[in-house]
Length: 355
Image (cartoon, rainbow, N blue to C red; front, top):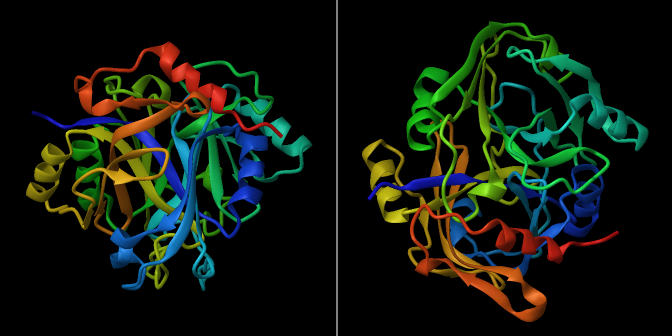
């Protein structure tokens, strides 16, 4: 059977204080649904944590507007390390997280009014849509873009939904694009432009010449959470006038400060593993069986893109719908590609964290 890419499940974000930054994410992005909160060791990730097992706490938060969530991740056995250099556009890895908006201009006005650090005024993307960038209190950059395929209208004043994709710095788009187009199934090129771009100039290092390719998918995603996760886009960016680009996580651990992985909800892990291996992207981590996250469980794996950016895959086996009454869904008994009913997904909204 063929694997199914169900959508972006979450962007992993390494932080020094989960509760502090999550409050900011609730205020500005409406990420107020707690799927799980788990404190434990991470023994399977020693390849990316210096060969040692480290303790951490992780919280998965979602917006009922739809889109991917955040896995907000904090070391508890060591300090969360910042990069020792200033990250600039074109450096390799997860540079920015795309957040979808119902109205980019209104989102911008809300952010300004509430004192967020916006990086310039809204500008036009090469596809003619408006965008702007905002920096969270930890220095992570988020790009606000026009969203599609909303799950619910929660009335959040920011007009934001969840994760809509990522800007990923690569060394060579031509060699990197196969992973994203073929394996991750972002087969549609919305634009492929080269030059100096007004919408990028407000970013650190954004005044240079770049090639940028925006990828999307024509087919609706399938799978249990596909209606909630919705569509997404990946933008690959390559600097054309820098020879000093560095890996964003250079000399640091997975879990350190910043965007640590982009996670896809999938079905058919064995089929995906075979496909990745055949195309030169072998699993570097594989839990091989159900990995217990306390309130949720599943099988997870990682691959690296051509520049070492970590892509995570999760095949969910168990997920809490309404924890107060012990309502969990066993997805191992569901038909592959089948979506959970909207009323079941909507019930996750009862796990809302209020401020």
